[in-house]
Length: 193
Image (tube, rainbow, N blue to C red; front, side, top):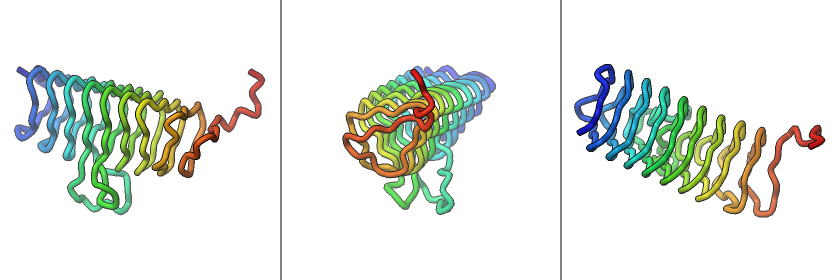
């Protein structure tokens, strides 16, 4: 049986599996599917055509499955698919896809997504990644398995990341990653450490 706080609003059309926990003031929309033993934190909104796998932990005040922040989006039915055993912390935003791509934003399994992370429309995140606080990736970005994306990092529409590469604080990439290149902080030139 699911454990749903009495102040949560869960649309009767939502599919809620056994063992799901939904916290106070959470809102769950009609086209949402939540897998077994997933926990949804207080004040979190899960909307759109969103499928969440099993044993995920989604922190409070997260926005999951919202419409993409893309000016071409006109309300087409698109999706957000989240795998199993992901830790998604507070104030994270995860958007559905657009028809300009596959129409799906996808997050794999066993990812650690910290507070204030933004994963935009049509992104594909592999398995076992870590997104540090405030990491932001724009639409259409692909992040391979085992990648580490540090806080205050911004990625703009890259589709060919180097699987051996990590990214550091206050850095940014505006083109596809090239194997063997380094991406550091713009403040490195002032560092004496």
